[in-house]
Amino acid sequence: MPAGSEPPRADRPAVDQHEEVFRLHPLTPIALGGRVLGLVAAFSFFSLIRQRTGEGGVNWVPYAIYAAVALAVVVRGFVNVAVTRYHLLGGELRIDYGLFQKQSKRVRLNRVQSVDLLEPLAARIFGLAELKVTTAGTERAAVRLRYLALPVARALRADLLGRSVGADEAVAEAPERPVLSVPHGRLVRAVLLEMVSWRLLLLLAGPALGLLGQSNGHRPTIGLGVALFVSFAVVILHAIWHRVSSLWDFTISESPDGLRIRHGLLSTSRQTVPPGRIQAILVHQPMSWRLFGWAQVRMNVAGYAGNANSKSTMLVPVTDRAYALALVGWVSGGIDIDAVPMSRPPARAALRAPLWWRGQWAGSDERVFVVRHGLLSRTVDVVPHERTQSVRLSAGPLQRALSLATVHLDSTRGPVKTRAKYRDAGQARHMLDCEVELGRQARGYLAPTSPLPTPEGDRAPSS
Image (cartoon, rainbow, N blue to C red; front, side, top):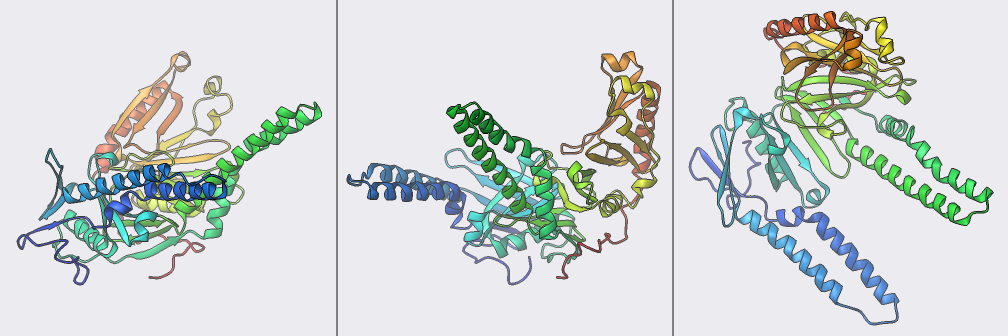
């Protein structure tokens, strides 16, 4: 670990020259119970104000309950910290925990998929951070070190990343080159366009119901309309705030240990995606963004079990579509996505999907399989052949009657669901056979050595 960033010897005494044993920060219990303690403090404050403004005396029973809950949360946290130890020995991280039943968990560092640095608001208040070590399993099986002092967490993160690739134990954090920084104004406009477009109908449902009740002189309907309007407005505003705050200051940097992604306003996240861990990727254009030429890029990452809205699967929240395709091409091995030959389903597919069959395109070259679909909102799915987990065919009763089939390329869990829909049955079988063979051949290609492309309008500030 780099000099000057190691914690005090009381927190991390050296057992010998090879093994390090350390505990979590003493303020971890308070940071872990931050939400509960905050709610207890808020309830206590409002209860005290209400009772002070009333005519009766102060009832101390609620405050005793609040104090008991806060004490239980803190004591539980201190017990967890006291009975948990972390051992770092060569290429292995061992966690010993348990009060009455002792348990031990070992993580081989050469199986680490990513090491993320997270700073929830409660932890940032005390200068703490969480390290999340994701292995070849799933995100649920990730090892979470909550919490360490921020300088210690940064140094340990660099140490773990270095050991995961077999570097020296005292390796410093690899340098990085800032590539992209999403402008705040563009992010806010994009979120508003994406989230308000269809939700606006729900928001207008309340006033419409109120006007209907007013025209009929029905007062309960007017009250219901106002209540619906307020409820929908609160829900929409909360969703917008959550999205903007979580993606605030979104920055991508390139480093030898992978792509480094930072974002967050109140709670911040620093994610490192090592080279070769991206299994599939997509470029999505919501209908409301197409006028501005914007798109977002999401990915399936080995070790992450993210859904379509998970922050861990976001590569770029909003950028120009041309740069999004260039970025996808770079990540996929230095290819031109637009140059991949693609074809449309046969005309009889209109009997299965009258409106949408024209927007279904699929094709491949010797490097990737590409699917483009959507008429109003458009999406491009890209899967390198060597990252395909399995290939399969499916056909419902109507598709079988029309001699159609759908080709599925299965990847790790995430937002990318690659399907070439409504293909001719013979063509679908040919696609499947070709994909199996191309998957064998593609494993001989190497990752690109050229630098990551940088967009002109979203250039990140130099570090």
